[in-house]
Length: 233
Image 1 (cartoon, rainbow, N blue to C red):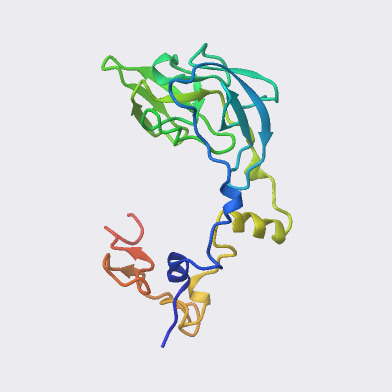
Image 2: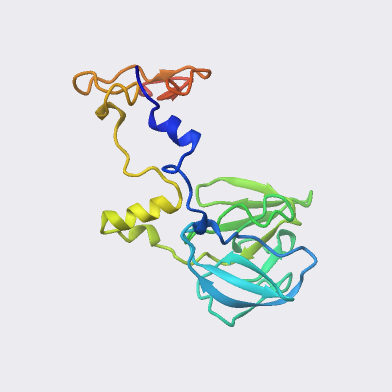
């Protein structure tokens, strides 16, 4: 009789597989839409749950967190719904084509859901006649958005973060623990037969990797109902 494989244990949740709550204490977002005018960066903070440094911004005694842009510093003044300058927060309809933006709202008022990792940015492509705004991402993906959606002008700080090595396994252990990432990972064929459907087999003889869409959790591994398999000719 087998036991729960890693996927099942993680899905069920336990003391072992749990996000560290302290890491997610800082939530990225924008102030309410009626808040407009000059705001001030009161702190640049580190968050274990985010790859980029966050700036703590205050406007009318209300504070919020936003990914810091390149060159941001404590005491700097930024504008909400003001001029299209770096660090300012504007609605998409007021941003001219060719401008780099980040922390883009998918729907007006949701606080920003796209482009929030270190060093990333998107570019406003054009303002369409039907009042939609076209935004292009670095992976060639193109999205049309409501002009009332807000975004921050500029590029997120921390570019090149992934190029810096962890050096020690202990540092990576704590980083992965903070975001509940399974690490270190091992190949399924290396484990025992009781731990995974691909396990054992007296050597690395790869087994069938196609799983049905409605297969039970302990067998739903590999290719989930693939349209095709093998190399393309």
